[in-house]
Length: 519
Image (cartoon, rainbow, N blue to C red; front, side, top):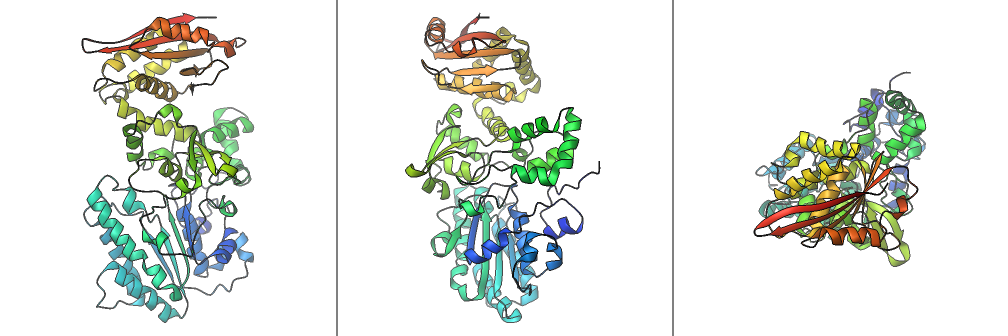
């Protein structure tokens, strides 16, 4: 079986085509883009193919038809005469550095000014950009193509520095304000980012800006459908299945659970994360890849600070208006979590203009909680000790729930601060069991009520009920009276009932618990 070439981290369309990497053909969307607007904005998560899409557009507008041989764009009615292309990539700079945005813009502008010239009287980036557009038009006698990649990185990266944030906002407002004033010189502009921030003037000034982020017609423009995955990567999936010693369909199901599930429009397809899929196929291992590539940790901090329960994040409700525009106060982090890919559309109630959001897949869910749990648990505790974490997992897998609860008791005693709540201890236990690789269910709705946590492993089932400054007896009575374990009556696995009460007083701090095995 011949190995495929996987373009991991390669965002250059010419390089992928010329060097024989596998390319999933998305060029058919170019025809739609040309029809539907002069200024277009697309929001998609990081590592989802936006940069490759811009590189493809750049090659198209520069007239490199030879690169599109055999692809959908080759049949587009287009004269293929090269146009001047100005591409601004905001991925490459560290914006926490002093004047990071100004330095990046200066370098990008200088590269193009060497081709088209610079007026000595222009001083600011906005002035230079305006003159550059006009100069490119005059020199080539063709309208200019403008491509902007990750425009919002100078904002997201310094979200926790209000002074730098305000400074960068002003620079971007002024810089992109040129798009409207230079309308006669611009043929097409395509802007990408993770989030659509409502304070940046490219969205308030450009009345004809078309936001395709939640447009059904462009739902699959980035990311891969399962059919695309099979059509383009069947050899790689077969190799992965051989490595895992299982059949093709079982491997595909595992990949679906880990990397599929992104839905950006109600009528779109569920999409795979390209970066994660490529890494899984290349390494022949299903693991977490995307979350390690630059997580905005302030989202996890915001969720914790606002008291949002980690156990309720799989059915969050939001309107479409909330999801398409983000403010910087972040009193509601849900819209940004949607745009950054941590939440996706689970159900759409179109008549009510309401969406139910959930984690798209296992990779994102585990990654987010891996980032969130240390905010609850001190670094010197379990999260700072991989061996201790492994022991938690082992206890659940071998059915040693007494040992698990003793470890949990020690962990709770180390928590910083006082006067926590029942929800704090439930949240920590839920995240901990989830990160142990189990199937953890929060607040399952039974016919008599909602259980706190149900944990399912290959051999054991654990049903938890937590109380705070109450009693273990009360917790156990609730498990029985509301029949939380009733749905496991015909299950072959052993079922443990765990009633826990955390006592937190000035003179005492301990976890009381009682365990009963019902079969």
